[in-house]
Length: 171
Image (cartoon, rainbow, N blue to C red; front, side):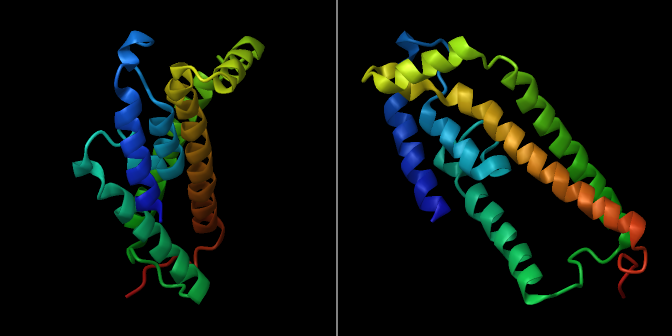
């Protein structure tokens, strides 16, 4: 489902990009912003530019689903069994998530009443400018995915610190 939606949005991105240079010197289409909002880290760098990047999306969602299925089935055995490797991976994940969140939040500071009125007027009109609102969706996506992953990895690290018996090496 996510792959189909991403393919449709990629097609819209290519259609909306035609002539976008007239309105913006670095056009980021609304479709591209929605791709990043939907697929998060799988859509880096900044939306799918070619079909060669398309396999990143199903790999990301398949891994996400695999981990979720393990959790729902009650499997407690971690995928990475070495405790020190897990700690390093969780720390790296936490650092990357904080960087994503910082990037998004630092750009969200530009949102004010004038910008919101501009976006609202662009959405109400049938002008081509409403297809170039992707730059406003990028900080929202970075903040949302970054904060979500930062919470996830901080919980994992907290459990390592408070429940050492659960996080011991598994033979």
